[in-house]
Amino acid sequence: MRTRILTTVVLLLLIVSGARSQNAENQAINDQVKIFTTLEMRNLTEVWIDKYRQTNTDFNFELTPVSRAEINSKIEGDNSIAIVMQQADVSSNIGEMWQLTLGREVVVTVFNKANPLAKELAETGVSVNKLATVFQNNNKNWGTLAGNENHKPVNFYVLDEPEVKVSVAKFLEVDLTEINTLESLSQANFLKAVKNDVNAIGFCRLSAITDLDQQDFAENIALLPIDRNKNGRLDYYENIYASSEQFERSVWIGKYPHSMIYNIYAVSSAFPENAEINNFLSWITSSGQVLVAQNGFTELVHSEKQSNLEKLTPPVLMAEYETASTRSTAFFRIVVAFLGVLVVFFVVRHFIRKQKAKAPLLNKTRYVKLLNEASLDFPNGLYFDKTHTWVFMEEGGRVKMGVDDFISNVTGDYTRLIMKSPGEKVKRMEPVVTLIRKGKQITLNSPVSGTVKEINESLVADPFIINNEPYGEGWVYKIEPSNWLRETQFFKMGNSYREWIIGEFSRLKDFLACSLNIMNLEEGKPAFQEGGELMLHPLKDLDPKVWEDFQNYFINTADTH
Image (cartoon, rainbow, N blue to C red; front, side, top):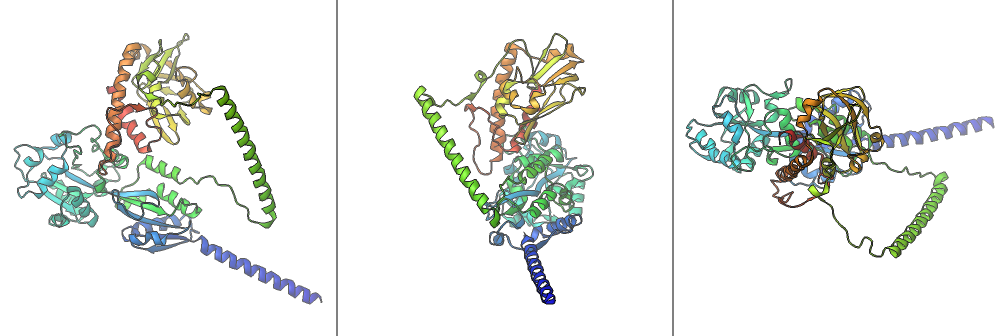
């Protein structure tokens, strides 16, 4: 009898363990990450996976090459992604899918730094129309390009890669067969040709001329500046070619022709809630970026990496309990929640009716606040600086410092601050406080030199105080100044500050018109109507790219106006 019982128990355990094993196997299959990749992205994707698995050995994946047309039909559920590359201005079947930019290939026009017209071209740039005219002209010379009597010939070279040739044809609006007539060179021969020929103009990938060790362009090679608005000069928002860092940031912001950019995307049917996929994409965005450059592509800029990591942060979801033992509890919670909603509904309705009875005209008219000189405060007794900060010397000799309400009315409510610590030294015109709104940020420079003696602790818990009371409880620091008498000559008060702020409004309108319109130039969609009134908080809901542009071309240049 005991033997039978023991045998039965053993059989039952085997059956249960077998079922569990089968479930585990099925679970493993279900948890397998399916990665699809187009042909041009296969090598980079394999490199990413191999490197990632060195530290994540249990990464369970299946890699499948597909055509771009197959992506929509292949991706399904939350355990599959595709890695593709396509031009930034091309609509395709991935347009409606969840996307994350992992890198890019940027096609650039370069010339020899020793060219006699280099200084002139740096000021005027070259319009695409002129470049196309010279390219198609049998008598290709620099005089046609620069508008002078220089009859030196222009020698065109192109990197022997299909994406480069397609981009250049689209950029110049010429037939691809015309591009194919150019001398096509390998990367080494291309660099040699441009370096040795002062009359050279070449088309290649950005990574081909970027020195990874020096983080700058290859010796004796410069980017040919493009005059995008064709006005015969290189305006401040077009002047993006001085360094590789500035240029790459400007590409991300949208200041470079989209026809010359191929973006590398991870695409999925929806936000990747699968932890394996999410971790893999986070790794590519951070540690995996070095492999982007090593494989001939252009890395993401720092701000773009931060934006990606925030985009990959999973939304907070309520857990679902499916076991039979908790269904009754779940039902009870639903009932309680429903009753709670009813109670809140009736209380709110009662309150609204009561308010309407007291003030029947309340909220009949909605006033939209505009951003102009009249919307700002100009308190007497404060010094204002072009850093968009204010200072006031207290009786003890310490200087209280804060942020003017122009900036807070432009950006919207702050959600976090990054401040100096007591005891830290600060210098005039060096970064002193970073104002953050939902991950987007700007950094203001210090109006004075000295030592931080006290910070406004209340701002740590409630940064909104700066928006609400910029000249009162919203002060930021108390500083012991080290060069007060000399630095006061830079400050403004009263009408002087008011006149300067009027100029800042004009500059803000110009910034929005130029910076936003240039991003939508290819689509022909104006992003800002010149001469129109500014609404309150114009930067509030704009892309982080615009905030970075605002930092570089408005905040960082304010002291020159």
